[in-house]
Picture 1 (cartoon, protein in one colour):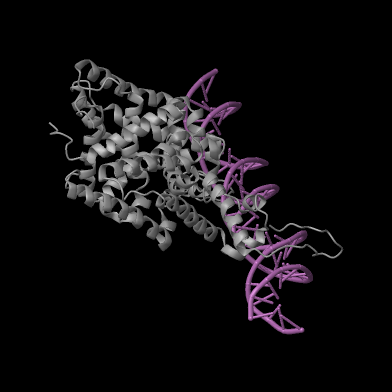
Picture 2: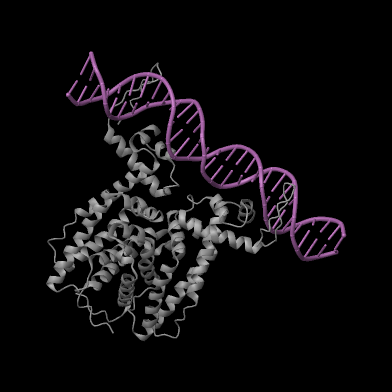
Length: 225
Length: 225
DNA sequence: CCCCAAATTAACCGGCTAGTACAAAATGCT
DNA sequence: AGCATTTTGTACTAGCCGGTTAATTTGGGG
């Protein structure tokens, strides 16, 4: 955006455009990838700067300090991902189909956003202190639960879902299976080989998870015992 | 073990006992807790030392450098946990009951060993590089799969299990649900409240998971559709 | 009881890294 | 034209932190 760089006499003699939002985005994009890759304490401000069009000074100008940058990066990462989820249209579908679609989508979406997953992992290492401090992030997540609550109540009314189905617990299940698939891929494939993460195996896993979750709420899961 | 400390004249004039194994264990115990708490780059050698009976020099004497200490700490953490699993006796049980017990145990065991979980999280942030380098750890884990393979083959023979049940994929399921419950507790309870992690709710979750996993391998999960 | 490798101690060092100081200039809204 | 905001650039520092130096004690073997 800037960088017209016309080295002239005096000390300062660049030509550039003002673009506060652009600069912020630039910094945040790099920051997300750097924090996701190396963690909060592992990330280096200088490394972030190096991958940016701007200077170190600007990071402190806009974000105050490392923690401030991290906090904002986390929020942006969350927003990006949750925004993708909003595009999913489930209201038109019957509850079981809607759930099926949601689970499949979540599985895919997590796989497609490893940086986000890593940010959440890192947050958990830090006891989710920054998530706790961010109203933005909390807001984004109640929305996710609302979607599920909607599906659940429709499903209960139709008699398709078990009466004791709890949206939060359901979200927990879906998240657990989709999240772990990405978060623990390195250790899992280090220990048991990379086979499970090939496209074909992942397709099987995806179907299995859908079956699992849908099966766990369906009322006709037949008399266990 | 040492620390008889009788401050006398000259520069070096402490009194101490030799206890190599004790010192190593001491250091490793603290290291596990410190690395688990703050991660590889977040952990401070000086902080580890401070919680030890020994001196900084001893860490380098026995473990070479920070990475060396981390690598050993990881191995010890793994060994401890897997050792606990060995005590479980499943061979006497019919396959479905054995699986049920294994899932319940894994869920409990993960909850009881948060430091281990955190070490694995940290490893995954670091692409499991240290796990990959450790034959010890890989060895411990093939054993875990063997247990499952045994159950699976017995279950298949009895006709209780679906024919396409894969021990690794099954292990993946069990791990995902049990692991996530601990690893993502901070973020999850930050976002949705701590209710899900009370004893009563965890009991429900535990049962649900058992139902889920056992249901996913049981042959009579009735014709879906 | 003496020797020597192994074990242990305390003080020290050098580089890395978050954050700052300073100084100036271009921008663009009003 | 005025003026707050945005941006540039470089050099600097303070302190943290991984790793080291070098001396000293221990205890088993001969």
